[in-house]
Image (spheres, one colour):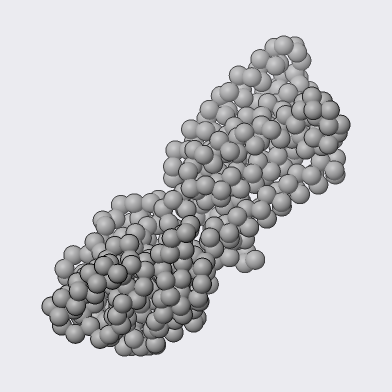
Length: 221
Length: 236
């Protein structure tokens, strides 16, 4: 379960996130949509305990798999060594490395140093480290960025299976409305730091028109 | 604190550090400058003694250890890898201890080749074994303290050059605080914190428990403060 209750964050005197509330139940994929600077990453960082809220509360039950927008690891360390390192950091069995590598599609890259991977391969390593230990919740910030079309389809299938098969609560931030439409059970739209809609995504075209209208209205107010 | 985590962090740090040119370049320069200054001291004294090696090595460590430690937290904060560890969530203590351990082991490895200078002196004369052992114990403890200060400086910023400069100037202040003690009319208070005074006893062949206690306490304090800084960065 992931829940945000009246989350608020001020930087200086400026309120960048205001009274944001939503929840993600086990077995559910929720899309977190919003234009650049809307407060998505700030909200996610508060949920993860990386940033102190100025008000409200963020909570994630149990272990969480986190994929940041700009994922990076250590250039000199091989993919397998990195994932084993992350297992030890998370306190989970290193026997889970092979499963995570296969699911994320990096099974053949185990011995390659992170610094010698392509952008898409790096992103998949990021996905693999999030999968370690089968967490009950995931926070994925732009999970499919840098992937080729085939990999995007695979990653969307994987995200869906985390909710359907593992009963995990999955919060996905994305700029791709087609992705939200294809993967998410619900979308939470944030603009100018506040939630402006929370609904089922519907078809991609409908979602796009509605998203533009909601964001436009929020920015005008 | 989980020792498995400390070992994992130290192992990763050692891999990252030794796959970069930093320890090789810094180590080579350290040996070259130390050898030149030590040979000059032997010429000046016209005696085959080991004692001058330790203050010279100690002073050069002030300038080199911060280069070894500067990336420890600063680089992880800059690239965002620290966020992943903190979201895991990994408490700060194994991170700090692991990074300190890797920095200390690297510094000790850098000191190993100085043994060649000791062998040369033994070949030229018959120096006592006691001051050599005490001197190296002192250098190892000093290196532990310097590494602690270096890791602390690295936790304060996401810029490696700034971390190195903060550590170097902080350590210079500690090294020369015995001089400031006289100038500022502060009695023995500042001299008590002088790293050069602490090392002087070891170089003289004495392993004084108060010196050992001071250097060990300095490590504990710097690592505890670093853990607080890392945790406060997370919850800004």
